[in-house]
Length: 165
Image (tube, rainbow, N blue to C red; front, side, top):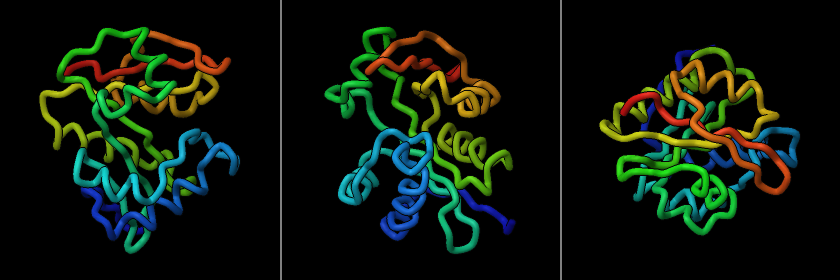
């Protein structure tokens, strides 16, 4: 494994993000349930930070951040919002995706820590399907805490947020 660098994504990273996303979608055997099209990424790069981890020329991980308002019409986010009281400093964290070869090597932590550095004084909040035990364990190891649960389309989810702003 070469040295991995984490940075704020730009338009040159979108192809790599899309390749990694496609390989990790639920329909491809992965745990990502939402697919974001190219146009969404290209637009979102100017709104909130999208981070990438690169090993040389390849994108080996990415992390999306977004505002609560931008997701207020998304069914699963609406289900989450019914269970928690959010304050102004909250933002939606995720999805986060790391190439299978690079998992358990600190990439998720590096992406998360860089995002916290870029957005100081904010509180990331996310949801994770209960059957995604590896992701739940990884997020708890980052210092996130479970604050609530909800069910959407028959699947149980945990809601996690940073333990401190």
